[in-house]
Image (cartoon, rainbow, N blue to C red; front, side, top):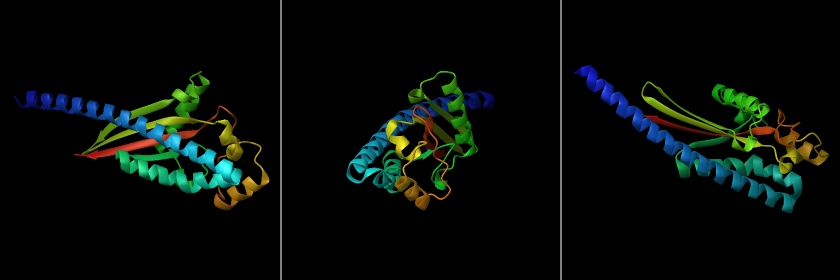
Length: 187
């Protein structure tokens, strides 16, 4: 009888985790769209008003605020990372690095960057962790600060803000990085 109760509890728990994970993925997708839209809008406005040097401040100062605000709004940890980071605070975890490498493999196999995403759920002890990543394609706007032909004023500002910058040399259509979402539920 105890074994039967354990099996029922296990099945109910797994169904609950599956529902929770599905909701997490939906919320994560909404948060990513909102983050991407807000960031791109802020970058375009900064480019128009202050040029590329002014746009650097968007990624440096405004992007973390957007991520923080959306993290609070959705109850998630929202960030960006890359295999070639500009800001040392955005270094990928081991899990994120593995997913980013898988994105590169999937891209080489012909998958469209704009559809590359991965989500996973795991339970460790009394914690249930849900993770999701969505690739960020390198667009034309990105090349101004992340490409191979960066103007001297932009490079000077980048060197000033990010002396350990590794986020250059990208070409149109490369994977610039990824949005990364995390939620931990303690039981």
